[in-house]
Image 1 (cartoon, rainbow, N blue to C red):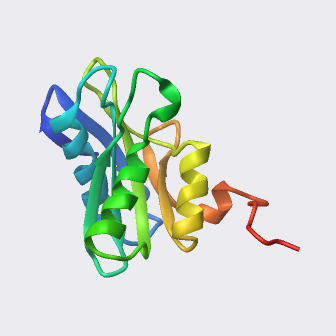
Image 2: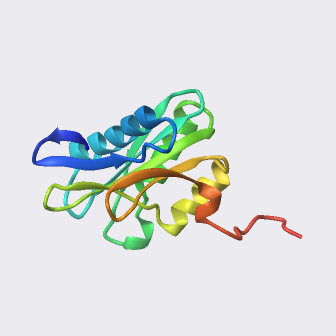
Length: 156
């Protein structure tokens, strides 16, 4: 079992699927997402962290930006993707992961919401998304598998 986070009270328990390649890089990505949400956690405002790795190896993180009016909230995955585009000029995402910081201090890998799946698929259709099963095992999944029959602009 791999633990990451600021301290024992705020750690993520992650078991990486050994059948999948790039275990060390996936572990690093989960650790980066966990580190940012632990560092910036604010109950009711910032509870989700995300990390993505570009194909060039650069990692970008983000936290969710909640708001009093819920519909203007921004997901952590969108913040990380925006940072990659702004700071590196590319959205060639190799892998992305999101983690949730519970009020208890536990941090776990979570699935991206539907809007984030759509955004990831739009900007990085070849990306892999790290997901955890009910036992905490983390594995890679092509974003296209998470959004079957995706709407595309100009489809005929």
